[in-house]
Length: 298
Image 1 (cartoon, one colour):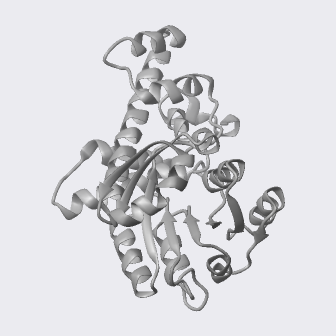
Image 2 (tube, rainbow, N blue to C red; image 1 turned 90 degrees about the horizontal axis):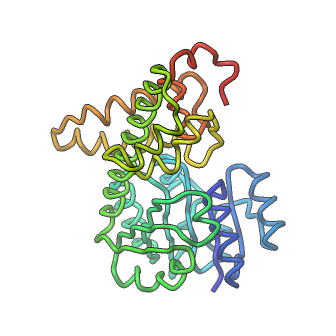
Image 3 (cartoon, rainbow, N blue to C red; image 1 turned 180 degrees about the vertical axis):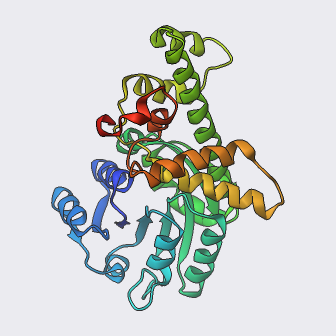
């Protein structure tokens, strides 16, 4: 079985490395950042495809790990070169966090081309991608899911089939919406604690033993305290993903004030040129005086 990757940023590259370690044959990689594709191809001993259709031609299974809705539309429906050129019999496993309807549309396009798609939404980060410990939420045809399962098991500690196309993307949007709200809440709690002169290490320990505990406290609390915002999940992606959830809410006539306020904070950071910080960087907005010293932000 020949496997390809389209989108070899932080997550895609480490998923490819993991499958290579597990003796899968990585045949081709592609990225709009040509240098990234060439570098990973040299590391894995595969081709750095110049065209999307070359990835499809060389591979039986193609993972896509792209940035947003527009990127997804481009790789599957772009004029001229795209992944569905001569795609009959191919399987596309789509891992990006994008709008549910885009997954549905891509599935329809793939079926017309004689191909299959599966959404495999990831609720994990770079380290888990490299170690094969992702949490995957899958959506699409159940037979297609079972066909992909042997590969997915090498990438994931937990795999959950949610339902038809678009359903896993809905769940992923909610996961990230709540995560982003928790991140903003933790930043405000630690920021207020710092302003009150409290020992933040002590405060984090108390949080961990009380109702203030969260997964985000474990992953981001110390980084917020120490201003260590090396990127595992970017501010820009946090803003994008909260936006997906808010669009779903608006379509149903729901107002989600916490999600809206959180997105506004992340949008503010993107506007200030801080979109590539880790999401923990939201603490730069909540700790007293930090936003006044933009030059020393990490």
